[in-house]
Amino acid sequence: MFVLPDILCNAGGVVVSYFEWVQDLQQFFWEETEVNNRLAQILDRAFAHMMDRVTREGISHRTAAMAIGVEKVYAAKKIRGLFP
Image (cartoon, rainbow, N blue to C red; front, side, top):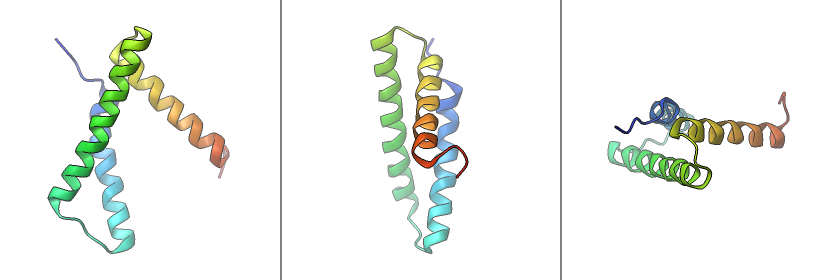
């Protein structure tokens, strides 16, 4: 049985919350289909990235998803500084 890692499952809600914030900020609102299409694109890419990592390194799906997430946070902190 395949179990989708929790960190990847939760990403959908986080991404849509970000979309709402951006739309409110710009006062430019998307149709539901636009939101769904953008969300699907992001989640598909994240899933593919996770599966690639699993295959390349022989690690669990959850470990791959967590490692990718930690690396993204590290990269952002490195660029922006630890305490922006």
